[in-house]
Amino acid sequence: MASSILSDCSSSATARLLPFHRKLHAQDFRFHRSVSIPLRPPSPTSSRSAASRFWSLSAVTPVAMTTDTSAKLIDGKMVAKQIKDEIAGEIAKMKDAIGIVPGLAVILVGARKDSQTYVRNKKKACEAVGIKSYEVHLPEDSTEEEVLKHISGFNDDPSVHGILVQLPLPRHMNEQSILNAVSIEKDVDGFHPLNIGRLAMQGREPLFVPCTPKGCMELLHRYAVDIKGKRAVVVGRSNIVGMPAALLLQKANATISIVHSYTKNPEEITRQADIVIAAVGVANLVRGSWIKPGAVVIDVGINPIDDAESPRGYRLVGDVCYEEVSKIASAITPVPGGVGPMTIAMLLSNTLDSAKRIHNFK
Ligand code: NAP
Image 1 (cartoon, rainbow, N blue to C red):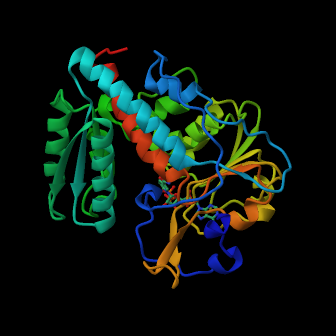
Image 2 (image 1 turned 180 degrees about the vertical axis):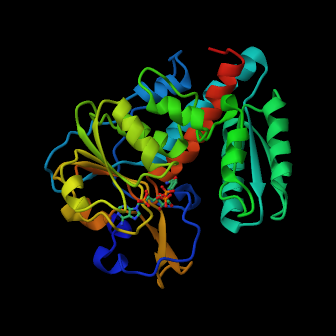
């Protein structure tokens, strides 16, 4: 079944990228496979918070950095399901104990189909675990003041524990001032500069970590990948993925390099890495020759490329050439079914953590 996710990277690297908004989430797409690493069931008796368990529970077969020729699959879909089950259990307990459920407010401006799909998926995911979702849908020509008014209302609403402004916003709006208006206590996306600043500082902790990089780290932890003292390379330095992923790896005591569009000889740098996180938005950029044998590879990219054989006319590939890299790495995430499902699971986790913190529920 592995062949269903293989691609000819030499041709798909040059394939026409579809005019699609790139911030697709892999959980929007069904994906099945037969090879996976079994998860141990979560401990039902643990009294620690969901968040702390997420960081410490190594629920899977450890991934040793070997030189085997066939990589293990890091199954984000399965891990995300396990996390969502854990979150649902925690929310049920919270409701029983204090009569409160977490609330997530989503503000959507405009009529982008992809944004509408994400918001719908987030709403469905909230309902599935018992988070109450609130949605404001504003027309494309709304003013920044209207968006700020809704943010302010949600900041003051005690039943809302997380606020998410769906990006991208229409061009006439100032994304920075809108994101800055979200209360740091409810910034479940983790994009507020104070949260990012705390993430970057020694001895400080952010209230929230951005969901996609948090999901990458969670996969590494759950697959028991050794990070301390290892060399890690993050390809991409965006505010929402690459930069916070590098900060998180550094916090976990890896030695970090960041590759970006001005980096000379990126493959020489990635070839030194025990762990590679690719978040670029370029289909199949990271080839087999970029990877050290036995490295662990996390592919964040979601790139739609033409595929006449697919009913939709396109298929999704990552930033990593799976076909080549899976023969060299010791473990790798697929696309779809890797990081994508983890992003939404981390959003739910952040919302639960926020509700617990606000209501002082241990
Ligand atoms: P972004 O904001 O466009 O950032 C891309 C980064 O990649 C930039 O730092 C850019 O460098 C770097 N880059 C571009 N071309 C490069 C090249 N040829 N060599 C080396 N570096 C290069 O993208 P993003 O928001 O981080 O997203 C990256 C990918 O992840 C996209 O495919 C996106 O769809 C996907 N994504 C997935 C999820 C998920 O849930 N799985 C969530 C978010 C994003 P410069 O800074 O020098 O321009």
